[in-house]
Length: 297
Length: 252
Image (cartoon, rainbow over all chains, first blue to last red; front, side):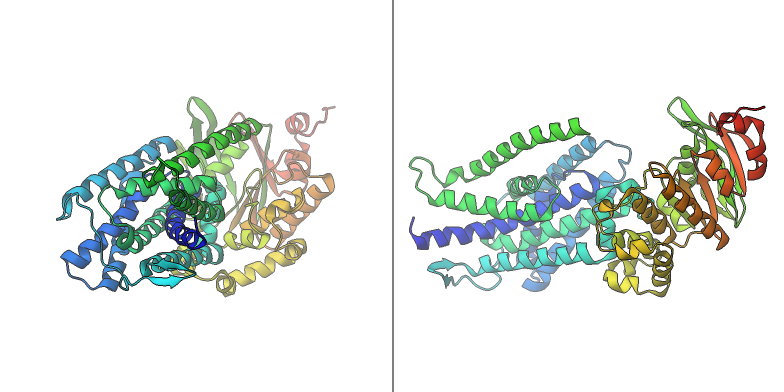
């Protein structure tokens, strides 16, 4: 691989990695506050992307308002999902709640394949600022890639500021430490759970609208995206946002570089295999560590 | 005034409280003593809403606490220092105290989105923080430290301080002396007397019956989920049954 090629693949890895990171953050936030692993996280991304295409192409809404509206609708869907499917099952165990999220994911996928006029076809919403590639360190970078990386980085910074410097952020953190302790200072853990789902849906929706023009989107795209975010989050142990972000970028870059290397019979079709291999390795290492932690406590 | 009327609590088939009743008048320091497993913590948990009553009622003045979850009872004027302190170990001392005033955010949800520094500058929050730092100068010194890195005594002070940040009408404490060195226990009890003298109403659950009765105005003795003896602290200190069972003294 030449240096130019390396830069090319590296930047494309950063682009996908930033998406994985932000999807992973959605997993981490919900897990920290509720101990639920939300398997509908990838569907939020899909919904964001599909809604933006629908609003721009079918409803004829201008780009910027359409993007914002897509994210808002996804947020509302996330909140409704929590209120209808999770909150009502109040005495259910965490495992049951996780299974409910799988059900919600299947539901979103099914609905998305039915209600949009293009059915199960793959769609591509318009680029934000054209498709004239920009020369960058010997590589050619699509402007949408800059939009993806830029938006996700800004969102991560905003999220960090929100969680660190506002009262809600502190309350979410308190709830992550212990919902019972949090309720003893007047924090309602269920309100915090609603906020966590809303934030996660926002993260999903935002990543969906910025990535869809470049990566394309269909009703079934959510599953793989969710899985990649899941890998990023599990690198961070579902606890550390920083480790999740690092995990997401690492996964994106490893995937992209691996595709760039000439493996002979192995082609880019095996890209997803890498993520799954990483996941298996993490789960193998972690399950040992988890068992150890359990024995300790 | 806190009134507990025939509180009944069971966990599955195990009955933890059998129609326990007690009253804490405004400005009183009342102690609840009894052996391990007598139901003292369950009673405090029931008052604060952590566990639910099967039957009975709990009132704080004219506000009904029974049936409310704990985040609501806290907002109605209850300060709870639970067993094991339950401070947020990964957060700074200052953040722990700030969260003590979180009920303000419940009253005014938009303030929850504020930058914490601005929230702390609200007059009510700021005056509470000053009061708490006056009572516990050590917490002011350590406000940037992680709460988990404090010593046991300091963590207990932090738990009490955090409860005071909500300007409670009544403070419930569940064995604040647990695991502390005797001198620290003395400090904590002295502090409770001081808070009472400043007008705070206190309900104290304590293992060390002798120490608790020495500072309390009145006391209740709990056995197997029931209140079996009640009276002024002086009466209880002189009561033969109490002396024998809880003060480790043989009756002449």
